[in-house]
Amino acid sequence: MNSKTVTAPASKSVSHRMVIGAALAAGTSTLTNVLESDDLTRTVEIMKTCGADIVRQGAGRYSVRGVAGTPRGGSTEPASCYVHESGTTCRLLTAVVACGLGTFRIHGVPRMHERPIGELVTALRMAGADVRYEQHEGFPPLIVEALGLSGGMVTIGLDESSQYLSGLLLAAPQARSMTITVGGAKVVSWPYVGLTLQAMEDFGLRFSVETKDDEGWHKTDWRTVKDIVPGRVRFVVPPGMYRAGDYTVEGDWSSSSYFLAAGAAGQVPVTVRGLRRDSLQGDRAMLDILRRMGAGVAWDGDAVTVSPAPLKGIAVDMGHCPDLVPTVAAVAAFASGDTTISNVGHLRIKECDRLASPAAELARAGVQCEVRDDGLVVHGAGRENIRIAPGTVFSTYADHRMAMSMAVLEMAGQPVTVDDPACVGKSFPAFWEQWKKVSPCV
Image (cartoon, rainbow, N blue to C red; front, side, top):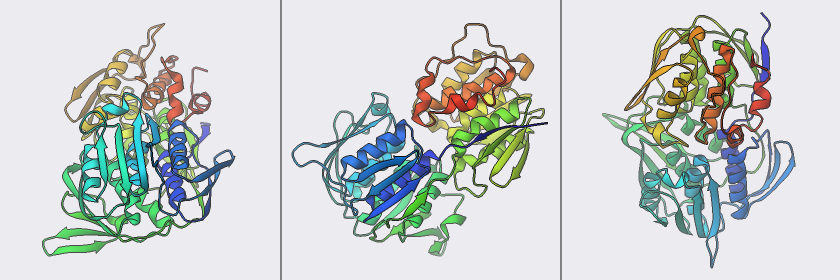
């Protein structure tokens, strides 16, 4: 059976980290295969506001002259750091500007001002930052009066987002020295921390990861740290400078997940090219999830093919890959039996409530779901029972991942219409054009 083929777009998560690293470096870097999306535009523009010289040289290719470790803020008025609706930009750059000099204002769209950031602000204050809330305690907008970070001992909880830690890690080399201990009750989205550590290593920075047992703290290879117990993992980051150089961004597993899902739920195999089999991206877990549900998975170099098969419901902890939840929920609609998704209660504070929203939209296609405190149960209907009434318009809730995951329902052979198709510009502007290559409804 011939497969349909698409190429993975550049990784959004890695692109953010490469732009930030190059912008903090001393000297000029060349970045290639950078994702060009709304979120990345915000990160690029803020780093330019902070003094970096960033010039687009072609599609996904940028020349970046960095600020040598010191983002520059305003002296009389705060430098405007408008994050729009990019949570990654907001959390990473709140920490990064705190290591600079001057005044910065972190602000975005109204929904961004409803997404918590208190855990990060508390940690930054431990590190010597002067951060104040402009409106509501624990939420943006923020004013950062930066005089550099003193560093020292810092504890941060990752119950809501691993981006808090990633931001601190990216800023830490500009402090005099910083030791960051993971606190809180649990850890979500841990693989994204690995992407941050990989970027720091790529940019020539030194750090050590230590784990604790009954005998005390021990240095540990960070690539082997998988199961994180709060209070038993810490990061020691000495002063350092990001190294300018030439860097290339790998393909994105998150954006590829919709096409991999199409291969599993549809009737024709789908091949996605340009992915790293050994990637540290947490959303690489999509292959394991689809395989457990019954789909066929085969690699050929940097291309992976997912083939359709009778799908069955599974129970899956998605705490390390929460961005996949709307996509997995859509695939689960095609399965027989229940799919139980757990350990993702923090999805309520994303661009929308990513538990209630998929449940509501799947119901429009005749698929019943139960929203639980920490997840979602999808009662698989099977392809033949997915029904989309003429005139149905699915709500995206202005959330790019909702829009793209609802497209997966087209594998039942009925076209999907969403209320805000342009919202995919946040992470994957070319999505609908690429989707035509796999949709049976074109």
